[in-house]
Image 1 (tube, helix red, strand yellow):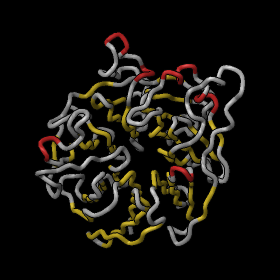
Image 2: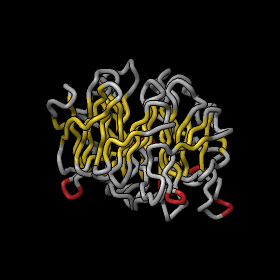
Image 3: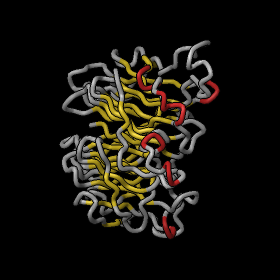
Image 4: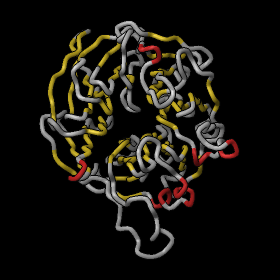
Length: 365
């Protein structure tokens, strides 16, 4: 039985599949804003990150599929230095939100990565019992030029671990581009070559450190193939993020926040288009999902089962997910809609229109 974890502004829901039907099964942390979830494929553990504002960030873990939860340590910055080059750092040294959670390699039991707002990367080697800031990335000289992409501070929303080599990690930052390490985080290089930021002055538009990737995903079966939904369009890499190619904007729009890649087929990916930029609602009031099956050469738009008029739904970065079968998709919106598709996004079934705004989804097999 497949389970979908749904992180909302008012709690964590589980949605379970029974045959062809999906239904809401349970609610955890009622009334609390859940910013991110992870279902660890290595040991089945579930993680839920809460963004509690004045009360800080909290992280909870379940080893029995939600039957019980234990609060564990949350990522936290070390004290800000009183002297030296970081003493006047204007970035707050406090975690406002856990924006990304990723499991380490199959050969690294207990290793987790957390990308946060502001854009710090944290590592745990003990299943979340403790966390350490990755100093090598945080101390990059270019970090001072990172800027907020929707928030006051830059944030790290995408962390992908190469399934062939757990020391090879790629992260995406709004707005700070794409960065890679091939030595487990000891050193980092910018990896946003080919991206272009139209919101920057013309002479700075190609600056890799100024790019705003909204979401980055990697094909599990072909890890050198990655997709990015960028603030200024869609990009694809076929060389492990060393370079990126712009994809011609599909109809009705190349702007959006979410992207999902078929775990088996690197040429297939899904996007949820919206109007550029401040408007951020479906084009012409019609909600669709676009899909490419040929690496971005062509796209088809699917709207069956989705609102086709007077639609105001926006899909956040982590609110479009594809299951391991490559055909089952889940999508949720800022207006509390939740839809499932069993045919690779061509038709959608509405599970609910009444949820709190949804921040993230995760399939748990």
